[in-house]
Image (cartoon, rainbow, N blue to C red):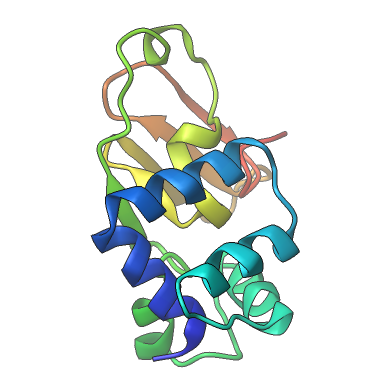
Amino acid sequence: MNQLQKFIKKADEDAELYKKVEALSMEEATDEEYIGLASEYGITIANEELEQARSCVSCKNCSELSEGELDDVVGGSGGNTRPITADRFDPEVCPSQTRTRYECVGFMKIVWCDHYDRQFLKGSNYGYMHQCKMGYFKYAANIDGNN
């Protein structure tokens, strides 16, 4: 297990760390801020690990990691399977949403809301269908949810 995997697992198990990661993500923190937070918990993450994970999450097929390694890092989000999930539904905010937002996909776009889904559209100019399973949005766009 690499250091980023350890950090993600630790954040998944430690509510205090999870809240700190979420706060940094909402502030659009730099990689150095995430690396600093990880080091507070005894985990040393290299910039290269963040870059590699980010590139694997944002492509359909990752050539640098095996499918098993990718599943270990991001819950399989490199293809059409889902990454780590959490119930991020907010009844005060979500009903007014018409597009994917941070709360839908989370830290590095790897901690998705249980109600968010993205499917690859074969042969489409847009590439992906983005959908809130609670019925608040469904649209075709690029992998990040933008046209």
